[in-house]
Image 1 (cartoon, rainbow, N blue to C red):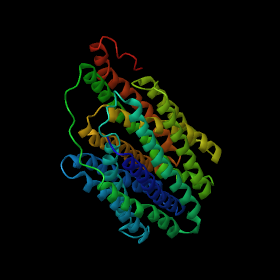
Image 2 (tube, rainbow, N blue to C red):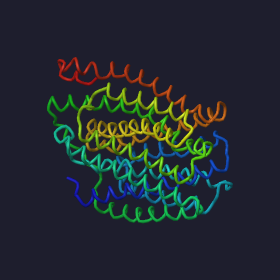
Image 3 (spheres, one colour):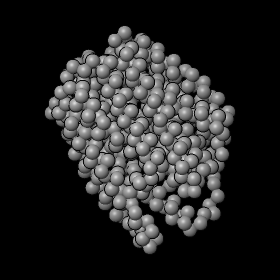
Image 4 (cartoon, rainbow, N blue to C red):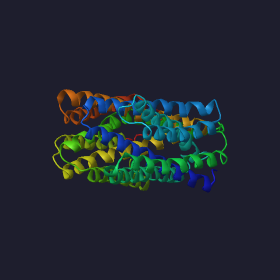
Length: 404
């Protein structure tokens, strides 16, 4: 079983990584928006970051089975530092700025799949569901707190100048890189687990694997909408007069809703293997996007962000749970990589599409389009559930029918 000290180091790394990352993301997106760049360009910048995170996540999940996972992990933390330094040493007009900024996504992608794989190494998620859930909730709270602190800090420092924001980001990223080397000496490569499973365990693994694939579909729609908040909302916020410090508070409040959703899911089991709960969450989020599209004040933005935030929390926590429960030890890093890649892929597509629709139909149209995409994907998930999960329920004689 993974040592307690190692877990504490991993949780600390989550906080430091996302503090540094999202301080930079805030500074770049807000700076571009105040520079009055076109929405399509904001979309391009965000899509590039998300696409690099998707590619990095796939590599971060695939490489550990072929190379030393510790090298992959440390490389991710080091690339985050390099990216922040590249952004600090250049500016928006520099040809190297965007490649340096996009490198941030690659670093995140390489770092997180191994980290997630280590959290529950050796644990049986079907026999020790609470233990696995506890590791996941602490992981989710840690990186979200880091993101909140990064956004609040960037919002407060942004009026003082970009150097303050990038300096604060490096103060988080440099200790994080050192901690990555410490962790590398505490862990071992992923080990293959025994394949001697009972009939019940095989059935539970198949059900979790089916819901794991359903969660990947949900990730695409959820992050298609959530991507607007990270990369395109600054444009709307500037247009309706939201000040930088209030913008930072809005994003931090959004993360607070997401963390609250994690905690609720950790303490309840009603959502386990139930499609109806997932679809209801997505419908609420679509309503939130429509509220944001019509927003004229900070208050209405907060209402829309609250409705959307619960879905971001639901999709992320449930996706991690099913990825862990539906994969043996040696494949959990790969499952986590695909989970993170579908999130980043949805964000890349959403940001790019949102930028185009924002340029063509106005800065509010992307949120309406995202709501439509999200609702359309609920139909796809329902169809997939009927093909993937329903046959399992029938083979088990109805024992698994409590999923909707």
